[in-house]
Amino acid sequence: MRVLPALLCALVLAGCGSSNDGAREMDTGTSSISSGSSRMTLGVNSYLWHATLDTLSFLPLVSADPFGGVIISEWYVAPSSPDERLKVTVYIMDRALRADGLKVVVFRQVKAGAAWQEAQPSPDTAHKLEDSILTRARELRLATLGQTG
Image (cartoon, rainbow, N blue to C red; front, side):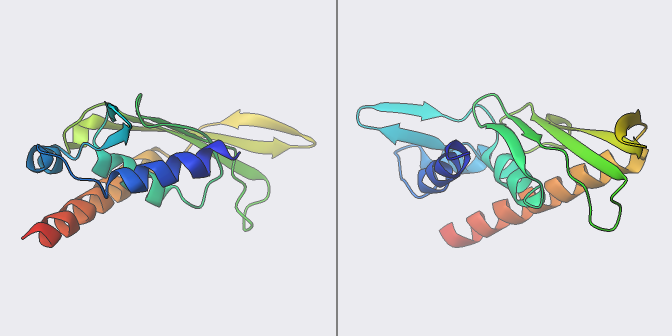
C-alpha cells in the first residue's frame, strides 16, 4: 500500500512543474512527470484524474493507474448499512475534459447469512458519482485558470 501514497505525491508534484508548452497542457488538463532526462505524460485528463481521487477519497483503493486511467476501489461497507457493500471502478478514457470521457461502474453486494451475494446497484449511483467527479473536475480547472490570469 506504500505505492499509492507515492503515486499521489508524484502526481501532485507533477502539477507544480513548468514546461515550454504549459499553456497547451493546462487547456487539456494533462500532467507530465519528469525524471532526469525522461518525461512521461499522463494518458488521461489530469482534472478528471484528480477529481476522481478527490471524489472517491472515502473509499480504500486497490489500484490507481494514471497512465491507463483506471481507478479501482476496494469493497466499502458504510457504517449505516453493514449488510451492504459497494465497489467502484472508474475509467477515464480521454485527455479532454469531457463528460463522455468518464465511465463509472458500481458493484453492489448484500449479505445473506455469512456470505455476500451480488445485487443490482441503484442506477442513479453511478450517475451521481459521475456528476460529482465532473463538477469537481470543472472546479479544479477553473481554479487553475484563475491562478494563471
